[in-house]
Image 1 (cartoon, each protein chain N blue to C red):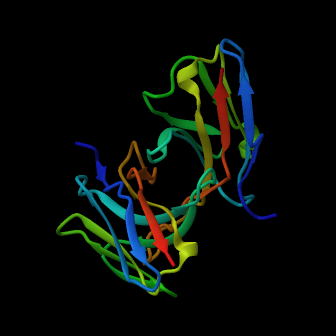
Image 2: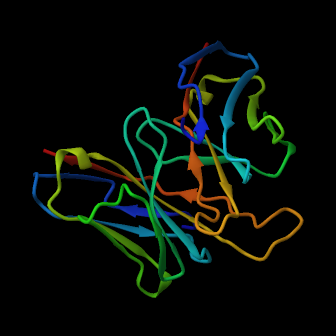
Length: 120
Length: 114
């Protein structure tokens, strides 16, 4: 399979529990993004990695959220002490940022199917 | 004001119609423009990618970028019921801190009825 893979697809958890999601990007991609999407809204940026380095986090990423990308391959997103407001679709995307060409750097991002989190 | 504005719709059209979907944006640094299609409870699927201004055609889909007006469009010809989905525009810039991070509109819900 050459696409972005996310696991699990669905997660139901009780408030206060910790959850961890996994994303496996397209193998040759050096960029990995995490987004959150709620009903009726577009994806909102959370954080991204360039290889194994986490280069940016949005203000949406509270202290209860942590992301890792060991060895620049798969990534995990952990939410500690979940709250009902964390219920959303968590999306992972990957892209390849490469040397500039006449067509730019071809930075289009490809998404996985998402992990739907429900906090009860 | 959000950086990327997109009318949420819904937009309802008969089968076979030409559909026009649009986004406006405020950040003149945006250079990379994408359109995604998202079915209910699925991840976004990349449809079109455009660098800088101009038009790009792929089958029934045409993407247009007008950087002077900060306005992008996606046209769907001969629309089909299977095109019923939410269409998301996204754009990114080569700025230092937020380099290439796609910023999304909220999506337009399209309904194509037989």
